Image (tube, rainbow, N blue to C red):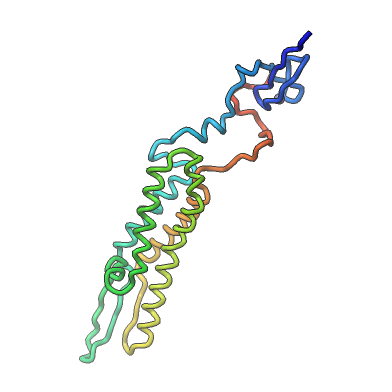
Length: 208
Ligand SMILES: [Zn+2]
């Protein structure tokens, strides 16, 4: 006499000589009828390109912020000329990158990278695989903008009558960089630890 092995659709344990899971009180099913764990199914399924979940919204916002901040006013330099007139000039990060601060190119490069990650990494497994790389890139705009703005301010402080004020673009880049850090950490969603049963079944089978 061979007892038929049956499985709990929730915890996936197998049992003999009973038709209900002692832990979950669910009707046991044969192996073939066992549903695939929802988390595994989800992890392989691609999401739509503009799906905002799993850190994707943050990375889209960060990409737009980095590209927008790059072409927005970064600093305004006021200089008193020899004749006593004040010359005021506003620079974007783009202009500064083209002229004297090439490290600022890190800003649009990071923005383009986040846009491409969101477009190309479509399954949670692929997204999580890019998390560390995204995080490393996410810190570069903030580092390069702080470095360059400080350098400009230091240079200005050494000259008579020159002052530098920080404009909105710098703040936009800093905020976008922080949003990118958050999005990178969340990219792909949370990993559920294996072997730990969640507190409520989410297999679509309701316990009786
Ligand atoms: Zn069970």
